[in-house]
Length: 227
Ligand SMILES: Nc1ncnc2c1ncn2[C@@H]1O[C@H](COP(=O)(O)OP(=O)(O)OP(=O)(O)O)[C@@H](O)[C@H]1O
Image (tube, rainbow, N blue to C red; front, side, top):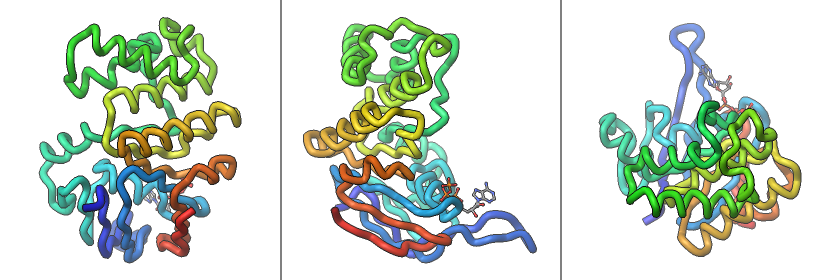
C-alpha cells in the first residue's frame, strides 16, 4: 500500500461570491521511500495540496489515505497522532529564538515523547553534525546565518525519524552546496530507511535528485514524470 493515496480531491477557498477553487480532481499515489517534487507557477496549488496531505488543512471533498488513514472526516486526535509520524520543513524556519540550535532540535523529539535524555542528545548531535552544524550546536538562532537556521529546522524535522517528510521550499534560503546536501540527505533517508519525501520547490538545482516530478497549473496536475 502506498503511504499517500489521493483520489478525486477538490478544494476551495473563500465563501459565496469570493469562493474560488484551488485544486481540481487531483489523483495521486505516492510511493514509499521516494523523493517527489511538486512544481508549478505561483498560485498553482502546491502548498494547498502539501498541507492537506500533511493533515494541516482539512479535506473538503475527495479521499486521501495517509499511512492507511482516511483524512476526510478524521477526528482531531487521530490527525494529531498522524502528524507525529511526519516531519515538516518550511521556508520560514520557526526556530525558538530563546533556545540554542541543539535545544531547538530536541524540541522535535520532546513533542514525539521518545526515549531518554542521553539517547535524545546523541540523536540531536548526530543530525546537526550531518548538516555541518557540529560546531554551532550551542548557538542561539540570532547568532546563526539564514542558511544555518534553516539547516537547524531541517535537523529538527528529521531527528524523530519521521515516515513522511513534507517540505515547502526547504532550500530557498540555502546556498547551492547546502541545498544539495539537504536534498541528498533526504534521498539517502528514502533509500536506506524508506522515508517518503514530498517537496514543493522552485529550485531547479535540485531537480536531478528527484525520483518523480509532478507539475501543477491552475490547481490541476499537468504533468507527472518519473525521473
Ligand atoms: N488561505 C487562503 N485563502 C484564500 N485563498 C487562498 C489561501 N491559500 C491559498 N489560496 C489561493 O489558492 C490558490 C493556490 O495557492 P497555493 O498557496 O496552494 O499555491 P502555490 O502553488 O503553493 O503558490 P506559491 O508557489 O506562490 O507558494 C491561489 O490562488 C491562492 O491565492
